[in-house]
Length: 383
Length: 70
Image 1 (cartoon, rainbow over the protein chains, first blue to last red):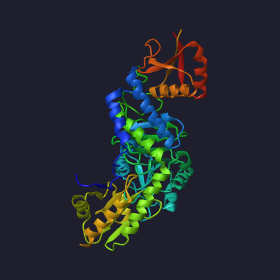
Image 2 (image 1 turned 45 degrees about the vertical axis):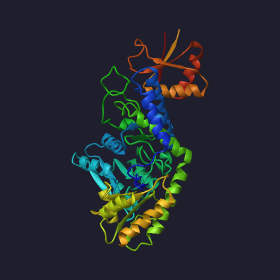
Image 3 (image 1 turned 90 degrees about the vertical axis):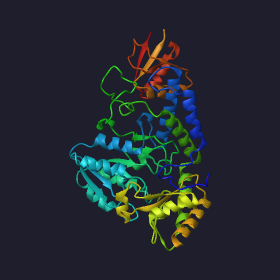
């Protein structure tokens, strides 16, 4: 197999810690039960694993009650769920011009169903313009949705300030933490987040098909109208959905092998420390930035500080897709080319519709992989 | 006579089990008998001697439960 330099961790992290695959294999091989559906040993053991993962996630985000963690398939499903559960015809929603389509498309659909949707402009490097946000919030707003960090530039939003403004105007705060969970420390109470959507397969090193929602300890879930209905393993005598967490939002059989893997991914993150992970990503990104600055043909987007390990570029004389394709086929370097499902962000940073070539690091990325990638980029764009 | 603690969901059963374990109280998880619950889940059981201690822990933890003795 050709050598691989994997720099597409913002799409999904790879490699995973070996214990993730081991836990998944062990679940399928030795556990296999369906939690909450039976009283036998294997069902109970499955429930212990799922509960263990809830506990770790609640702790990760500074929430005391593990039942406030709801497992869904990924961040997109989680955002759909949160937004559709709370938006009613006439509800006004403010989102930022850095949102992913997992938010923008949902809200554009809801606009056609009577929601009022307004976009908050951002700086060209991706940060929300706080004054503009405050101006928008002067009009009655039901909730705001904010991407914690951009999947295009890596820019981290000042959630504390955004939440403060939103709450002063009685608007709820939904945060899309797809790019930050496991990478940037998040305490929902300290940051003022009401609902957080996370994915398991990026910074948390879990498998694809894991993710969910976390509700802050203070948030009244009675304000939400569940989108899904079905079997929960509880209150089975009734055809109405249970009114308690997590069952009121968690229907059908969970992705237990995935959750078993996610549990080990989170333990790995905690063992290394989120601060240390973020520091390493920042260091790699800073190195990437410095080396790229020596290549005249390349333009870099985003700013150097307050970011995750994402670097987006374009080159003056060569198409993005050609760069991505040559990096892959000639050098075994994996990047992501195009709009990264975030047309709004590209409009903000001035790269719409061609997009960028995006590189994204993880805890497992080595410094020499960055230097080699930059050397290959130099060869591609200067010939 | 056996004491049965019945909770809303499996998540709460797990929570209760962990709380008891953290306090050194041994409990057993069993399929909830049909006559005390129609849920498809399980419940936490103990003998009469530990019932009160568990009950107090559940109140302290603000976990909703029903207690039945059979």
